[in-house]
Length: 338
Image (cartoon, rainbow, N blue to C red; front, side):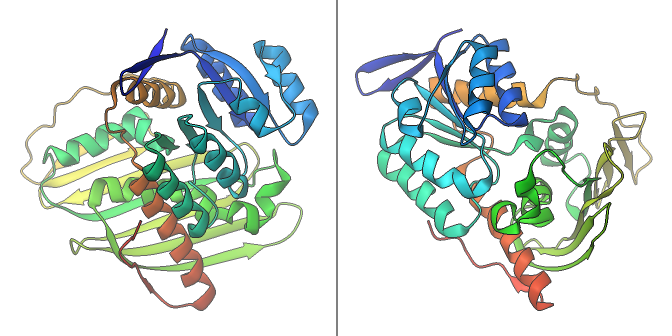
């Protein structure tokens, strides 16, 4: 597979990916790239041994700096802790290399806006990997709402509930990860906006209990600009290796829902009592679909399913949620100025 980037009259054939961050998700991205027929050419990690292990597994070159990776590749895939997204992304954009960056776009709004403005100023594509938009069941829920299947949506509920992440010590440091509100609930903030539109204000409460099985839980109440209401919960409170997620959207015409533990992935019912008939989406790897989509956008210049503005708005909601949790007061969401 060869992907093409057109810059003026110049056609560049892109087949080489550089990965920044050789943790568990970085390793999975590498597998996806290889499945897509794209060469993983270079890798960098602050832990040299991690980069060397990925390089040995993929045939890539283990580099000793981000700059070295950028000089060897056509596209940069940034999969580091959020606080490090800014440095690698800015470096790639300034060298004219399209960047795919894991969510959240950054740990703070200052870094995120700088990334967005640099992409705009350079004209180099920047894609933020909000993978929930590529889960087939969730994408189908969105498409059904957009098609008017349940009328005007008025109530949104979702949750993302898992165990405390043990595969990276940085998750425990909120300055790096943002905790549950930034690492976990940002998925649902993004999906809620995709289905329901912009959020006007939100209010968050959270709990934390220390111990051998440390737990964290946050609960957000949202008012959308449309007048609709919603609530989102996120947790690191489950026993090890447990995870579940759900979404329920109620409109004036009926209800759509999806639950990871349900036998049928999507349920629908209408107030009219009419039978609901639509095909259950085929199972597909969302990470593979996401990366394929981004590369197709680079090739064709199409608008991605997740825009930089979407990523900024999702981060804004997560940070507003942290502010609300700290102050105990609701937060009005200001217009984004990029």
